[in-house]
Image (tube, rainbow, N blue to C red; front, side):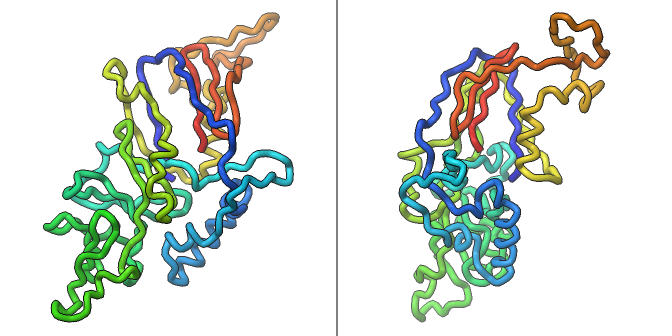
Length: 302
């Protein structure tokens, strides 16, 4: 997943964080943190065999009732979450954009007829060509680059150039549709929900992406940044939650780091490292809030 970092200046006082008390439904262990690598390898083999991303994402039935893990801990449902794709300022509405999230290949494109962004499975149902390599046609439809099939904002096929005009309306077949994921623009960021099943089409009524009110506050300055990093999500999150490494791993880059107060200490180094005081005010399976020396740290899983 493309890491999306948000740098906000100045800092505000800590707002309340609504963390859900109950865990989301259980999903297959292949999507858990411990099974992530195995899951990616299996997806790659299935894609090579010709299955679409939508088929892979929906092949494992969900358990309606929460089941305890072997350790007795709550299980996190990785598919019952909203994921950021990109700031809308980085998306050209004249072209489709391919993204990969949780091993799912998706395409974001602007439906100018409805005035909304859409997120589809990045695979044409015809020959599985990536729709992100296609274009927006003169009628505002997403056109596949391989054979020119065209899709509307709901994922329905509206035109197959090779089909005779007086022949059967083959473009209306459900097999000619492309999977469409729920998506929404919030905080000037395009978010998507990685389940395309019809029962999740109204997921916004039940659950919205995490809201960062400072982004929409004109008194704040927000800087968006996206970087491709050659390692996994788990390593990135562990690194971002480890402030003790900053004076050393980023020596000479991070300015204004003060020496940590540590009563009884007589040996200080010039980097300014020391004990890091941290207090967790609120925490559960959905994330945590920690007050900091300047402002607060809020983590919303995933």
